[in-house]
Length: 154
Image (cartoon, rainbow, N blue to C red):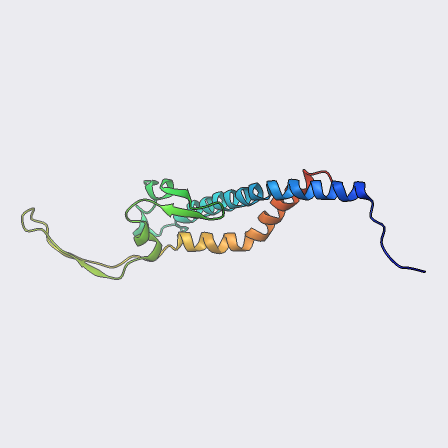
């Protein structure tokens, strides 16, 4: 008695057609995942910009009050699989990484004396967003892949 498999030509044709549809639509899936992860990371970065200091912590009374940093966080598409999340205000790096104590020079012409700046604590709003999205990425990608395959009839 011979062992083997029986291949139905109609099933094979359907399978090949379905695989061609998936192959054609697969780049769209990558684009959706890239876009979704990018928007979620941007939202997390915006959440992390505003400091969560204890009540009555008077040193940072002006911190985050203009909203310029938060509103400057944007997405830049690099390629089909890469998105760059950027804070476009000039001081974003200072907020992200902080500063060491330093001397602020005075201006003799304007009559302003120099002073010592105590430095600023780093906020790490982008770094925190990256860590958070790293934890959430598997779930978000899984949702998109499940949605992609559930929309196709096999």
